[in-house]
Length: 152
Image 1 (cartoon, rainbow, N blue to C red):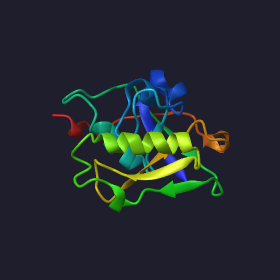
Image 2: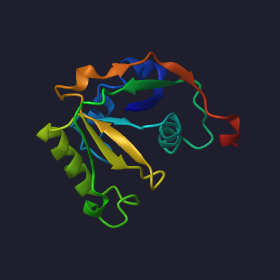
Image 3: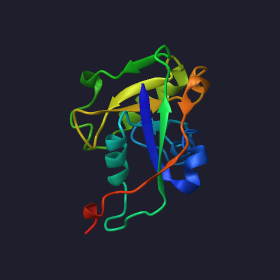
Image 4: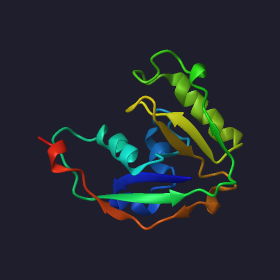
């Protein structure tokens, strides 16, 4: 399985460390819990990045990083029925508790979770503390630019 992350060049070396999520938390983790947010396509990674940008501010220092998970590493998929209604509209604490528990349980290296940016699509959370994480192969960062038409 291939996954992508987009980040600023200055953060590329640690893009798969989970440090940013540990410091600030996210939809699927509390501050203090390391978690790596990825997408199974470069297009979804771009949209997930875009929704977090300052309006009208086009970053000029982004890179994309592709990673390949071996087919035999343990993964799982979240059951949509287990989520609260309108989970994508809220920063519901139950989502962070779920992600924190998944990380601490350490059963799988990857968890497929629904995208809030594009319902019907799925992102992939990575547990950088899992014993299979070192088996993931990371590519070199490549410059990434959004199309100018996305910024007024």
